[in-house]
Image (cartoon, rainbow, N blue to C red; front, side):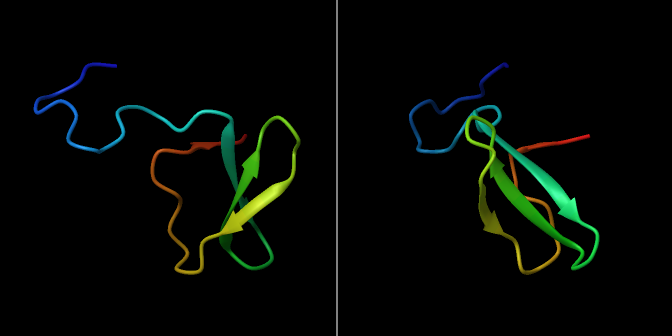
Length: 57
């Protein structure tokens, strides 16, 4: 992925690795999951997806 200056300003370039997210159809909230272990890690309460985390199909 291309990077834009300034470099080293503390923000992430690209997607978060070893993470994925899926929408819980019952609660309509996004759940973050570790792809190595399959464990659920975190839930977004505002209904918006996590930034920079890929979505599962």
